[in-house]
Image (cartoon, rainbow, N blue to C red; front, side):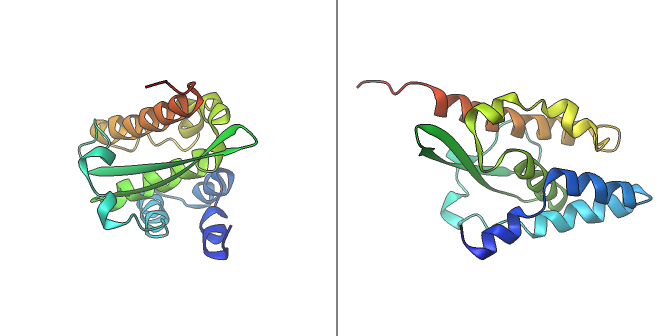
Length: 153
């Protein structure tokens, strides 16, 4: 893993949770979420396409998934982008939960419970909350696909 990637992955979910606890109001938390989004690895322009678009989001969201089979265990890495700053930050939070994990680990994460610890649902619009869950659904779907046996053509 290159140093830049290590730096980007250094922020783990527990660190985000701790930072949230230090921030007194939601305006500061929103700014923090936006800052997390600014740190996302850029999504190449050619990946801003219909095939990578996440359905169910009001904002435009694109997500690419790289699957590596380390010793037969599929491990997924994600790169994503959005046209909305706050959504880019939500993508960054999701990547701390899911990126660089095995498909089985991804499927074992209870996103509603884990993200609930940040109290996002109480502070996001219903559309943003639905979009967040659409991104989770897409990530979980990619993990399920990675675990599926290859089909013969």
